[in-house]
Structures are given as structure tokens and as C-alpha cells.
Image 1 (tube, rainbow, N blue to C red):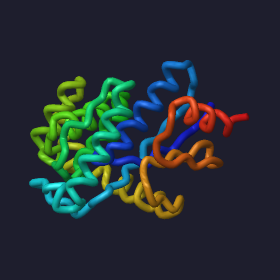
Image 2 (image 1 turned 135 degrees about the vertical axis):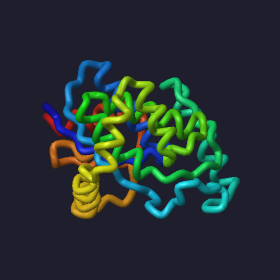
Image 3 (image 1 turned 90 degrees about the vertical axis):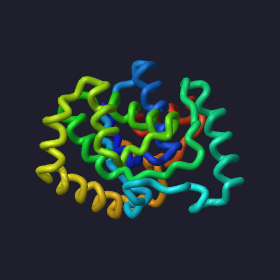
Image 4 (image 1 turned 60 degrees about the horizontal axis):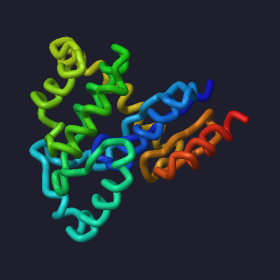
Length: 199
């Protein structure tokens, strides 16, 4: 079975599309084991959020999101949040709890949807709780696990791994430790490149 490490951030619209590419592989009967590796695009993003237009030119942002929305149509996803920029650290820590409970893919998709389709500030504890509860996770247990610091070492290990693999952009897919697929592409091309590693 192919094994893939996926370096990703909930604040990355291309990572949302990357999740959809992996989902389609499963729909096509392709078996693989995914290990999602948190990669914060902006660890210093304030918890209250900020205006994306203060970081990038407005014209650039709107053009990019329009292009992304067209790509997302085939997967039924939209990019409506045009300028909210939010911290993702706690959301990533919650992702470890979701993984332990066999719900990471649901959790990630719900987190991406909240961020990009509703402009939700996923740095806020109550918003993370709402999303987690919506997919059937035990919110009290999740918060106890996060607040205990039990995931901090794993988070640090993911950061160290990103340096070892020299991750410069996301999403980056490391397949069977052999191939590096970066960014998003047409599904058929992604599928071909993904499967070529196992040949």
C-alpha cells in the first residue's frame, strides 16, 4: 500500500483542493495510507484574525480565489472567504485528537469548509468545538487532550519533519518516501503521478 505524508494547513486553499484530490483517489478504489503533517503558513497570525488584504494586494487575492473557485466547482467546494486570515495552531492540535478517533478526514474537510466557505475564525476555541461536535467528536475530551499539552511534541516533530523534507510550499505530498508532489493539478495527472511511485 502506498504511504503518503501530506504537509498541509487549514489556511491554505490549495490544501483544501489537495484533500479533494486524495478523496477522489479513494473513490476510484486506490488504497493508500495518509499521514497529515501540520504546516503553519503563518504561526504569528493573531488569534483574533486579520485582514488578508493587509498581507497581499487585494487584486491578487481576488483573482486567485476566483481561479480556485473554478477549480473547486468539480468537487462541490467554494472559496467565499475573501479576506479573513486566521491562526490555525489549535485547529491542528484538534486534528491529532480527530485522527486518534478515526475522524481526521471529516475533521479536516469541516475545518476547511468553515474557513473558506464561511469565513470562520478557526482559532477560536468555541468554533473548533462546534466543528468537532458536528462530526461526532467528544469535545470535552478533545479540549482536555489539547490543553494537557499531549500533542505539542507531535506538533514539533511535524515542524522538524518539514525542515528535513525541505518543505517550501503546500500542499506537498511525499509518496513512499520517493516522490514529492507539490501543489495541485488536474486529477488525472495527479493520479498518474501518485500511482507511478508504486510501479
